Image (cartoon, rainbow, N blue to C red):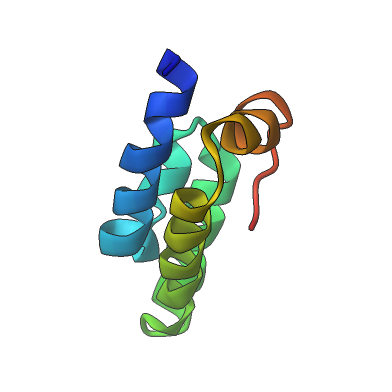
Length: 79
């Protein structure tokens, strides 16, 4: 497993547990998206936190190759 592929599990778990605060976005280097997630969560009294949870599940269900291609190389910031 490459170093980039090993980020998949960490990002997925962070998304599930701390996704409301955008921690998984910051971990992957998506600073702008992380700030947007944080602000959205604050403005919706936590309701937007479901986005991080869903993204964490999506990260964990992708193959290592697909994760790297989509989120590391392709820099896809959302879902």
